[in-house]
Length: 85
Image 1 (cartoon, rainbow, N blue to C red):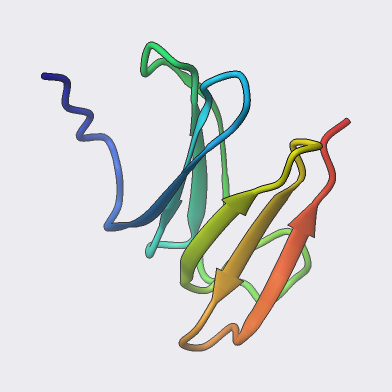
Image 2 (image 1 turned 90 degrees about the vertical axis):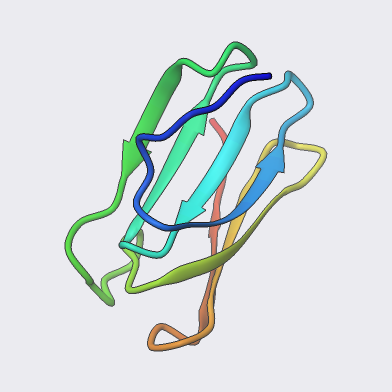
């Protein structure tokens, strides 16, 4: 069994085709982990409505191209799409 605890109120998790884990965190950020649980990327500043930032992300999904979709239900009330490069 594995456990990762460096999250701020995780709300959802999605997995990419290469095994990456994408975690939405209620405290304004997204974390991406490799298949071994190592942190690859993390972004999100303190509660911002600006594009690319978050107020309270609740849902997360990854499509077959690796594009990331993040939904905010409470204050943000939006879905943002991040295109994989």
